Image (cartoon, rainbow, N blue to C red):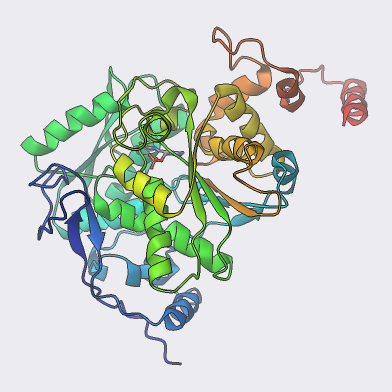
Length: 449
Ligand code: F0G
């Protein structure tokens, strides 16, 4: 077989998800000019041989060009075309798939793995979408890019903007994002504005700003972001030798990621890269559950915005932009929605950590959600399950330290933690600099293990 490594120029067509309009270009806010809903990319001319595509993508793994080493651009046949000289890449993607044996036992399933998107260059899944959308900004000649964020989008955007010699403007809710994420956008030289509002308030201001100023919007309403984030699912299927799992479980915040993974699954099915669809399930924190309520209370007919509150600050979102896209993929893949409590999130996070993997709080909703989907019988013991871990453990060390010290729920309704939580806690032990004291601590730990 001959393997061409040059990009195939597939034609990407913008289309409104509601009225079906097909504009040649998008407005600054990426909303349909007719009906105001979101746009997505479609690819009417795709006629690929699935076996040739698989072989080509695998072949590229051995090549040295930045475009081939990127775990996003390696799959460029399924992305909107962007000329190579405009591509900004940090060699994103290429994230590991891990067996999760202890978590599997806890959840009551035999086959559980986690795809760790926190192993991306800025330590969250956002990089896979950002490389594509930031490259599009570069191609269009923008000087400024901007986003509203709970911390990970901003970290990612600031990094890619800096690499592409563009300026970046970050709007984040004051006091409600982790220091780890804030520190990233500072070092990556963004203009960082902490607004006295929540994420949804930041989005409102940004939407007005982009109508006044020539800044390029890099939130996940930008359809280039969704296209890049599709590659996590493509790479996952390649890692599974194109044998789909029964279930994929993702956290839901603004709902761009679930939409992207679902879009990739549907496209891979249509292209005959996979023979059946996994069920894609979306998990929200109980205090930030507008999508859960859309499905369970309103039968998918509407989204009622709410004031969101959760210590998993990444998904502290009350008015998710991509809810219609997420609803479509939830239905087409026959997935479920679930909500989980703050305690369940904290426990699940420590359990993922105890498997030697670790993640940030928002990612841990996946394991917490799996446990209840298993209890409800939606996930069967013999079925294979993939958790998408969206951010790295070190993104939010405050949460982790508070949990292990027992301070996480101070002053909240969850103040009295159940016994199983203390079993997971590993507070640091302060001792005199004395060998005997360390040996005694070791012996006590061994007795309790
Ligand atoms: N997990 C993490 C670690 C996140 O940072 C986010 C979203 C999500 C899950 C939810 O993904 O929004 O696509 O449904 N973070 C955004 C941000 C909103 O600004 O960093 P989603």
